[in-house]
Amino acid sequence: MSVGWRLEFTGGPVDPPSNFHPMVDAWADIEPRERALNLTPGTPILVRPEGDLDFRLVEYFTRSLEFTGLATTSKATYGGEMRGWFDFIRDSEGIDWDEASSQTFVAFRTFRMHTGDDENRVSPATFAKSVPALRGFYTWAVNHRYIDESPIPVTQLSDSPGAQPKNKRASRDKWILPRTYGLWRNVGLLDCSATYDAEALEVKAASARSAAARGRNQLRNIAYTDLLLTSALRNRELAHVLVSELPTTSTDEVMLPSTTAKGGRERSWMSLSPYPLQAVDRYVRTVRRAQVLIARAHGGYEGREWIIATDLNPSSGTLRMADSGQRRSLDSLTVEERPRLLIDTSGELEPLMLWLNESGVPMGHRSWGNVFTKANQRLAGEYRRLGIRSAPPRISAHSLRFTCALFTLLSFVQVIDQRLGIDPLEPWVEARYAEAFDFVKDMLGHADEGTTKGTYLKPLRDLRRMDALGQDRTLPNLMEWLAQESALVTSPGVQA
Image 1 (cartoon, rainbow, N blue to C red):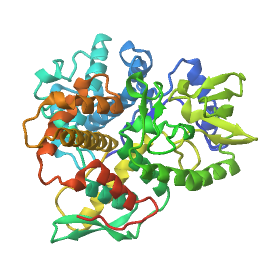
Image 2: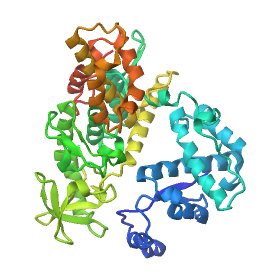
Image 3: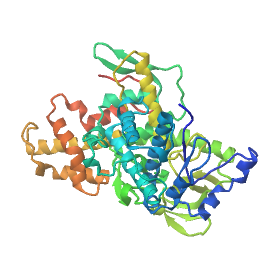
Image 4: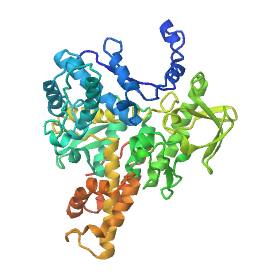
């Protein structure tokens, strides 16, 4: 496959190497230029394989009412879907986006869902994101007379069987067993080898690490995924948490500000287990501290478009802005400002964002997608090495969120059943469990209970009836399992 389209985003901070190339030096002030042009941080930029820009794409991303009004996360999703489509039509037919036909779109759907390799193949729900992303762009292009006809179906998804499978919701929401997460975590994130238990017909994590194991950022990554699994936060929400915004213990509830919560709905959150919080604390005191010191030594917090603050007051949730001297609430900090925020304590600068990369710079939330992708690839590689043809587990931030919510709901329902003396095999009476659904609705940040029930009601009822589920699948025992799989234990093995 040839070199494809490249997707970049406006905003910073950026730090081009000095004296690398005169053209690069000339654009060292790119952030002020972007602000002068009123370009919102996080605006996609699609660069053609030849290295130039298509003025029509630039116009759509920066000037169209249809695109500029989208949320930052939607812009990133749409940009990624458009890049995938552009690459496909270029590689498969050697054409540009303005030459595609409806037949090309049908071939793209088949490729993405059925015939592409493991990294290109997606679920029906993921593919469904392509449809509004591409339809919106092509509708705009037709209205501006850049093309005569859109190759994307114009009917609603539910009326277009060729565009969206009916099972898209079921295919997206996957819950995982504790031992499945343990296998993925130990092999994918901790670089342990995998073994095949022929008697149990199961792949398990071995205690030995693979020869290509790399220890960098493992403590950070397992702390992050463990916390996703026990908090039900979205990837973008947890990625923008500040150090001062963490719960102290598993009994503490803290507020997720409206500026980072999806839909702008402020809500409380907590970790349902103390062990991920302990792993985060170890990460902050060891790996993160070392990264900050390295960044300071190499001038990593100089020469950037940082926002400097002082006098952080965690109890009041405010800090003082160095440029204006005014106090500001942490809750008001946007997802664009948080990665640029440094706290100045006695002349020493340090990011307020919790998660840092190896350079000591705040980690972009999209970078966590790479962490999950690499972990999935490592596990898939172990399956191939063992000669196992069945598909390996593929875990995402969403599957961890879904699993946490489902186990929480199941645990809540079990408590209600026990309290009322109800046999789980008795007919389901939904009114009995309104309290459970209301709790999980608030935990997930859903706007209404209908969304929660639409997602979790069927799997909950199925799990409730499963005799094979057993006590070891309840949320309290999941937490016990996480205790045994602490961040400092390389691999005690995953039991069947």
